[in-house]
Length: 375
Image 1 (spheres, rainbow, N blue to C red):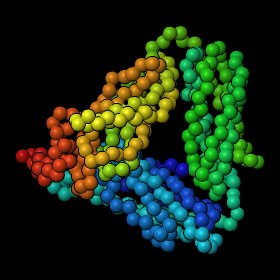
Image 2 (cartoon, rainbow, N blue to C red):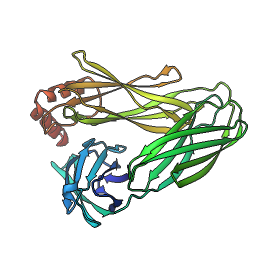
Image 3 (cartoon, one colour):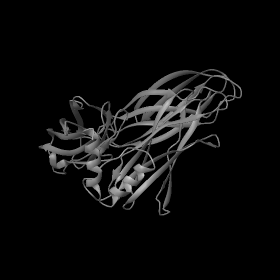
Image 4 (tube, rainbow, N blue to C red):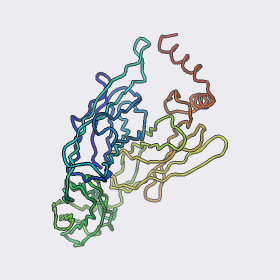
């Protein structure tokens, strides 16, 4: 997938890339791109996505998170494009029109912004292979901590490929790490490769090679492994956010912002327990990652919303046989189209969410309007 960033600002609405391009796609192929929104302003809602132009019938979209949190919210939009089998070679154009409505009102009126993303598609004839190694990041610098390497790779071709990744470590401890990943056309991935801890401190280099057939890309990264003795390992959960309403069987994402406030790189994993007042409970364990000392990360955990109900998410982060204190977050699964999103919290807010679930939207809206007008 190609990751694009749209800045959603309170003054101007959506700011999108000028163009999204697909090059040398074959007829009959289906390709995917994911756009990540970053909201620098007030929270809002993505209310409409309309494919346009001669490629409008080729495009389908799925709003993975319709609500866009304020400040640091980062929901995503997946664009699926299927090229009909009988499509001739050539260049085709179109786009997407997006409507973003801010939750906050000014003078009792909500602001809605319209933005267009242009899409160019070039239909090719032959299968084309090509890969690009964008970056290598060493996520490890301490003796006895898990070693990890983040490799950013992209498939530039129009056919799926299997990419071999080889990391050759040179230094006080020599080793070779091998990994394989299958990439779809035009897909980009951040591959996190774990390996055993280093035992001997010193200066090291990592020679990284990625290969897809005859296509080979290389990069070298130097790093230092330090022996800091028995240092403190501590993780702090700073924030948990989620779209506050969803429909049954809809994809949702939990965003957990964490900081390594300890003195050593640490492998962490988010754990989310979803429950209701009636006793329903489900545990979701997110993907693991390694945080360097002082590093802040925003972890994303995906799940499917269950039956209509009001839910609470209890989020912990596990590391080194330790689990952090939790942060509680509420959300609602409802089939009501005009459900009002509420902020995280507990007590009275949770009661309001339950009330919302059973259709008392009018009462909630009146309270919000009264508060905005100083009543």
